Image 1 (cartoon, helix red, strand yellow):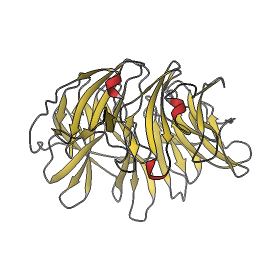
Image 2: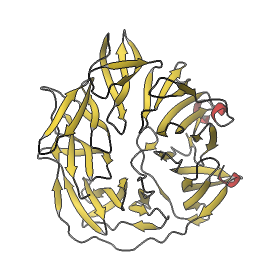
Image 3: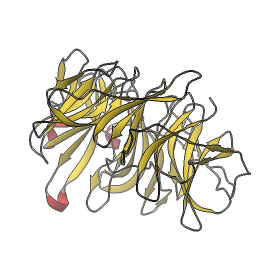
Image 4: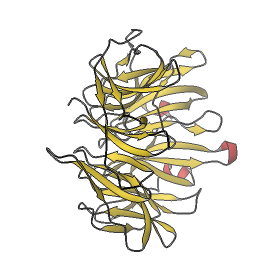
Length: 396
């Protein structure tokens, strides 16, 4: 719990403003897909711009060569595999995920060239670290089970043996920040009393992050973890019997320090937090320089590396918005709901909103990542339900 740590609180200084000035527009470009493919989705992007994903059960990679169009590579299936899906890529663009072999899900790692695949003991890869360490679900039958960290050389570190990790019956890796840094979801309880808590693992030591997920209070949300152990979480916590909704940035590894960016209780305060997907993760909300994208009272917000909170003004016709991705230098991808119920996306940087449009006939369904080099990748959908990845080149 947060009161077990040295906690610092940064005052919220949200900038006002009802609407943003008009801004230019950047159009997206569809990435190439196999002929006849229906469901093609990207899941991760490396810092160098290698995109990884899956096309109708077949693993794929994309890269834009200098002065050449986007190129697609079908990754090799492991021997005996019928299908495979990609979970993520390393900084070098090596993919990892899971494959179906003899009707059983198996964890798999692809070579840097993509022409060979190696099965890894375990049922699936849940997270891929920048230097090749994998978070692998290894044992047990759903809903129980546990996970290991698996290095590129095959050496394994079981994620158990501390009070925080051993407090539940199921452990899954949310993100890997490096060979010795990860965030693990630990599940405990039964029925409507089930809870899930994020635990920071750093060099073998662990720390429970403040929020928890429950049937009655909803899901907590956690960002990716940086190599130094910096991570952001939001959701309900229980401090000595006081229930609060908090947005907390943890710095300094284990034990480290919790910096409370926002806190709301029954007696007051402001609701602010990350925007999560169904996995309770917001892997793009924390930029490499420590900036954070999220939402404060139904309006997109950005927190600087120093912790100063800034509301992102609405564009004309918007009634709600949230920050769904952040990159270094204060760049935020904003998803907004317009007054007619439609969704729009834009880049916010230095107080300017740049509208992002999908290729003609497509709409953006979810943002994959905004890289520090200014590459935005998202998945788009057409009226027939076909999905494809698309890319936008934004300013560096």
